[in-house]
Length: 244
View 1 (cartoon, helix red, strand yellow):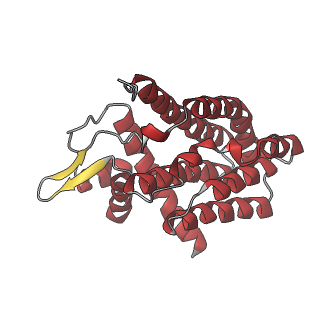
View 2 (spheres, rainbow, N blue to C red):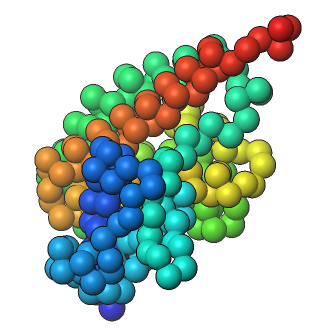
């Protein structure tokens, strides 16, 4: 049962990620209508249930909306900027620097984990992933659980230096979670679910022994975080001073 559930979730992730990339790349622009459920089912070779869950994931992220009797339409991608009035520009710049240095190290760690993980290490990675989801569903900060997941991936390289690198920074190595620790808004929940889905792509590739897929998924996750932080920095720099 666990294997069947994992397989179904993998298909949902694959379809939702494929559609997400088409949206983010502009193949489906804001206002465009997605193909029908039947067309998506045929195009991706999956069941209608998988397509519905994949589209539901995009809806929860604020990427698409259902219009009764018309179909599913693409929205402007959420920026996850929350409340830029209270954002510390120096802190954001520091967080971005941490993300940049993490990227090449953790991309390699993900690839090695796909090759070297033991069954118990793989199980720990799935448990840590489930813990992130539990925090999301409870409306709690995902910062500690996020960090624990990345530590588990580093541990699965069986090279202690990867784990030591993350431990040296502590939870500050997970800067994106700092942006979602206060008000429990829909935007926060969508943001956390996006992070969770990016994590899922990484761990599925690790579980499948897909070295390159794990690297690409980790790269996409950390690069996406960099883009979100650069958006926040740009918005803060362009925001008129409160003195004006």
